[in-house]
Length: 286
Image (cartoon, rainbow, N blue to C red; front, side, top):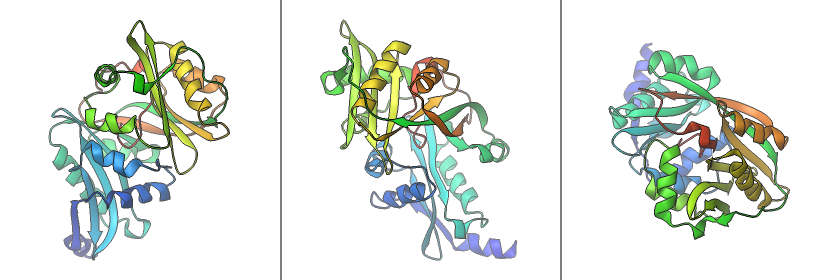
């Protein structure tokens, strides 16, 4: 314990610069989380005060993000400690820093299954449901009735997104739908938004997220358009397990479950239309 106390005294936890966010992305890649190739820049846009790095003896030892979307909701992610620095209370100190930053907001996270009980006990978070990562293949044809997202007024998209996400995220969303190496489509009916989706290039293959839609048929059309945009590529889709219709789409296209996370919240499950969430935006930012 005395040795660990010495380590804690030498530990520095501070805010990351934009360039240092790439360290967090590389840590995520080393853990097998397969980040998007532009995630560093895009994540930082969500909250440039909410990314933290832990340094021990002058060396980067770990990282975590705590994105404050507004005054009532935040999200924890990119929580990694280098293997050689584990069991030195670094993870606990990073957690404390993140919780201090997010104050009394309702906080969400997607935790790996083996850490669920730890988050329940140490952080007093409650488990809400599982998210499943599916893997499949790109290809097919873009169906009719789908438009490029650039044809949708941004204000209309932002209002629609807010129904399925617990807080407004204007700055982040504007960058997310326009990122390089990505495709984004929407469904409109008499000018009204009925759904939208994005697929982005990752270290391996492409990830869909978000995929929001009012109806299963609409979600499937958008999904088909997204996967048709990356023929022959590996495609990933992160599905909330309670959304049975989303699970049906993944199974219909012969996608395989790779792993699952546990969606947890510090206060309560947000009042969003989860039945219209066919694909999570990202496990790091919610």
